[in-house]
Amino acid sequence: MFSAAVESALPAHCLPSQLPSPPKGRTVVVGAGKASAAMARVLEEHWTGPLSGTVITRYGHGVSCGSITIVEAGHPMPDHASFHGARLVLDAVRNLGPDDLVIFLVSGGGSALLTFPPPGVSMDDIRHLTAALLKSGASIAEMNCVRKHTCLIKGGRLAAAAAPARIVTLAISDVPGDDPDIIASAPTVPDPTTRHDALQIIARRTIDAPSSILGWLALSDSETPKPKADGASEYRLIATPQLALEAAARVARMAGYNPIILGSAIEGEARDVGLVHAGIVHQILRHGQPAPPPCVILSGGETRVTVRGPGRGGRNVEFLLGLLIGLRSAAGVSAIAADTDGIDGTQDNAGATIDATCLDRARSMNLCANQFLGRNDAFGFFEALGTLVVTGPTLTNVNDFRAIIVDPPAAATEIPPE
Image (cartoon, rainbow, N blue to C red):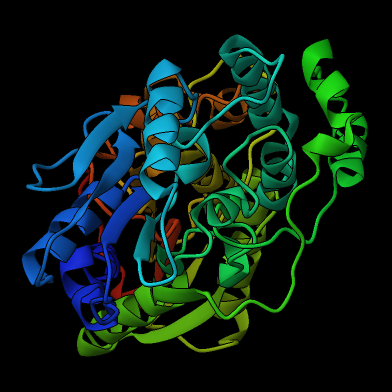
């Protein structure tokens, strides 16, 4: 199911049919995200005519291209390569005319990868702000509101720089609700939020923002372009979390399981979302609702982790540990939670798997699940159990994928750890 979800969002499958027609003038390709380099190569393979431009992707996610320059940069923490790449992107779209076409390739991770600090703000200031945002428990919409107003390329500013050229954005969505205003902080989409919203988020989340950033947000220059009627920009969603869940559901049906898609836009604290999913499993086991076993609960979205301890857990493994604790070794239940980009948090795993034997095995190893959860070290817990899922970069990103298999208890069999 996980493989089917990832495959449905690979650029080779979802991009060619969405390409625009070649323009009378130049075609410039720019982009940012974990899938953007793979998207650029697929575009080159299917495009007739000359191309130029620059695309930024995460370290280790680059692929070779012919006419398009690939820059690798830091994620989730931006670095000086992010700034260098963003400057190349802006330079590529300047001085274009109405007969020219800009194709913007965007996917998850673009916010960090495409970073251009405003005057008086250093890259270290941006890195400090990013770290504080990641630890604050802020939602992706809140984080991107702040990012838009502290960067000279996000929040519609790239589109403004490219005018009067036509812009076609091809997006692989990694955000709940597939909102173009949020994906990669929307470099080609006018921004409905304001700098005052950004300041309120910083205050509400008690984010330790550098004084240079607070000073910039006090200036009217920090305001982003606002929505208006504009026929020169087009936005195409070519892959979404919902489509990935539907691909997984087809696999479930073929295996004789009834798929239950809870939603592709689930947010909240990862551990709490895990407990809620556990409650749904108990409802199925006790009452056969919303569907009797054998069934599969599928969900996606982007949970968050409020860092309380020094652990290494990403949001998928933290969800899974919360789920495991809530299941209480329920018979016939196994699950996977993994990020479709292949990277969960700051470690090299995509996520992990569990089955009904995990808690007993953990106890035999003197591992206390609640203690690991308390210090945000779900990675360490599943590493010790040997159930981490390691895929390497998948070169796409439609966010978190969660599947919980519920077999009839009488038919349940032990699933060996991976």
